[in-house]
Image: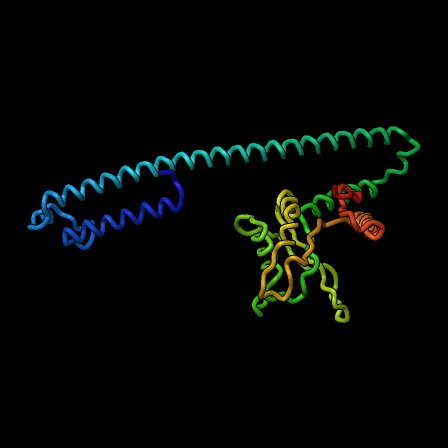
Length: 280
């Protein structure tokens, strides 16, 4: 008998039924009240006692088998968890090494520039400060993602819901465990009373790795079709928090893709690695 939640429930039910049977035959209310004297009354024969002992022995054997299987299952899960953690550590170590190498290269380039007097005069503290600020901003954006298409007033079954509820629902649709750790969530821009368009929602999570995984599962929303909301989850669009230059570049790619679709609508196009690709 292998370990599983259903097996445990089944075994629990069998033990409960056996206990009830024993208590009924001994005219006792609960197992804690069992005493040696309860086996003396007439009617509690040797055959009855033998039957009880045999059933309890069989139940003990089943319990031992399930417990052994449970221990093996937990050991296996623990090993898999350790393996996953090691893979994650190796992945982050690799990325850290890559960052160190990039910094080393950039510092070398910076040193080479400084050695060139004709260019060094153009490097001011203000420019260095601006470069550092740009790098920090880029790192901050990696913890964000944007939700497009959500109405300003969110409702479910005619009850108001907020943006955090929306992210929690999406989190569940994507089969994540628990609830997301949201450090900040806000609407982007100023709401215009004469515009029917809703403002996008910027969500900030604690870990950029989770943001990347979240965005990689965005296509799951296309298959979500639930009622009782004043919007459709399959109409929402998730994107990274792009810089202004990245948004301009993205708009050009989208325009290029639209033109190619008009030219040849029989093919399926998509954007990947900053270029328009054709699905084969």
